[in-house]
Image 1: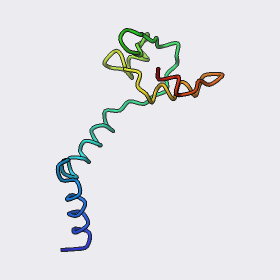
Image 2 (image 1 turned 180 degrees about the vertical axis):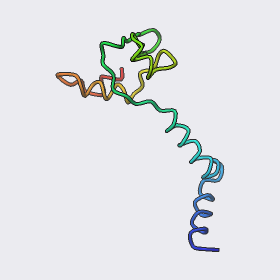
Image 3 (image 1 turned 135 degrees about the horizontal axis):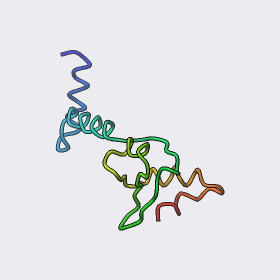
Image 4 (image 1 turned 60 degrees about the vertical axis):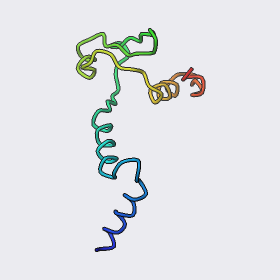
Length: 96
């Protein structure tokens, strides 16, 4: 066996009980492909707060990037929005 093959087997052994390296890579690729990251004109969106914060498209331009109609406002989005506010909002406050 080559040295590289030994390293891969060693790494796979360290993941025992958590799935294979291939499963990990497949899951990371699935997450990467399903992630949506875009910059939107706020005039084309509204925010709904009904059991959670969601972005809702108001125009066909926004709907083009949000085919499911709404998008959950996740922790990363809170941090991005907090950093764009003037004055900026401390991120520990933006996720409450």
